[in-house]
Image (cartoon, rainbow, N blue to C red; front, side, top):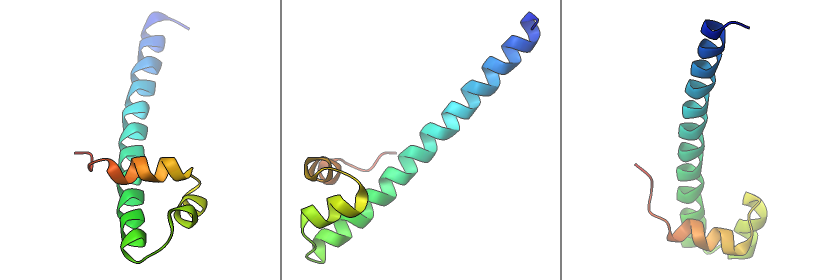
Length: 69
């Protein structure tokens, strides 16, 4: 592969990574919102953790974080 082709591939991969990072931030924000709603609704942390695929500590950490901007 020549230098130009490699640079294009690197640029494309970098753009894809930026999009993936943004998608992860957005999904985390949605998960945080719904976990907060679940807590307000009285669901136990253990149940929220099980449904979210997180540890209980992970849920506590998620709930303690501020929403990303």
